[in-house]
Length: 81
Image 1 (cartoon, rainbow, N blue to C red):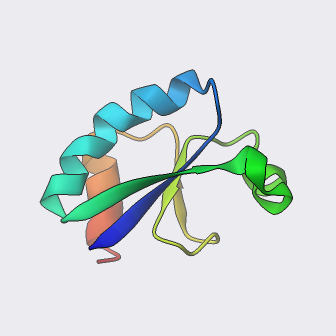
Image 2: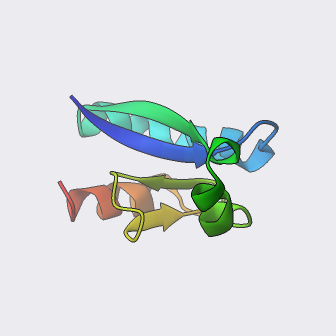
């Protein structure tokens, strides 16, 4: 099963809002959500610290950043899966 990565960190309120938009896409595209704490890796902190929440499929140069709505996220995923 492929993973949808949610780049997040402790206490990210926007990340909780993003999860509401993410959950339907997980089922639709048969994905598993994996949260990645950007605070644990300096390169991720530098790249995403002011952009989280951000979701991706593994390519750090191809991500879908907040704000996104359910339909926008699903369109982004459909173009990549």
